[in-house]
Image 1 (cartoon, one colour):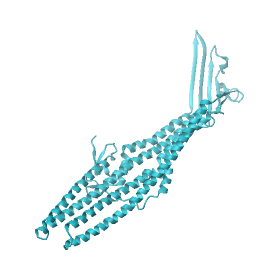
Image 2: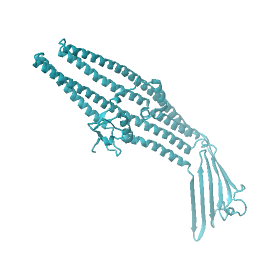
Image 3: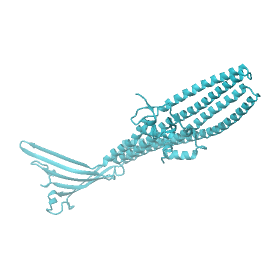
Length: 473
């Protein structure tokens, strides 16, 4: 598939411009591009729909059901029977089924037990499970499991978004750091060129020995090699960042070489993250814990259903009957309570070995899931603390690195003044300058590590997506 260039038009309205013709890809723009167009983000968007479809399907167990049965037999020019039974059944959450129907049975050889009035028989009543199924049945269990699955699907969506955003943000940080390192390398090359020109002029004027020109030229060559490596890093980090960029039609995009980052995107918040607050947020909103809790809820539903199987089956059915011809007003109300049909059903295994075994398995599965949840909770808390410790240490190193850069700068400035009055050598000036450049490069690397450590801390706490989009648990 051809990769389209990520141009100004494709970046708008999220791209800002530092100067005409120089698009800037900010972190906020990257986040929106990833959430809107990345294939994994679109896959994640399907998870809530899967949960809703599962709940909708489970609610179908409570849908009213209309049924009609017609059974007719003729043989040897005799109408044996014609049985018509039409009814409506309405299940309810509490295990009660509301029934209503109409029967019309005729025939020369009809079983007397099936006979109905000439105009048909109307009936209405209820069916109730007084034993097994009173507190929990298959319909209610299916809906509870589906609702728990819906919660797990939402948590899975958030986990997928956290992962894809962290990968994109980490590569974006590397890209920003590579551009800053490139700028430092370009400045170093320019300094080396200026010094090489100065030293050659001094040599021609007789103020410097020829060996100084060779040393200045070698420094220029070394810094040009470093510049080439920095340019390579920029190109490679741009390619890695392009892996996360897609257009609305799911075409992969490639960063235009002229696209620049915002240096402020490498900056991290002041201080260090609060471990306790992050652990509390993780307890409430971490996707892995939410999925584990949903799994426990599903298994708890199974346990309750298995426990219900230990109860005896005791089913009651009661119907009020009426002559259909009374619908026209003849003979009084069609349901006067005097005509009725009822029945009771009872069933219970004597040993209940299968039921007790299934209940024991369900209890063990619940216990196993709860132990896994407790383990995950501890692991996540420790990971958050580990990342917070890393972020705090990197903050200290970054502050110390900034001070080191200032000190190296002051040292180089003093050495340059000594060199100008002839009290120092080109070797010492180059040594001071190399130390400063290396300190600046190391400082950029530390700032990149610190910025990624902040993202990693939010990732381990399970709140990266929420933090970037302003969502609340």
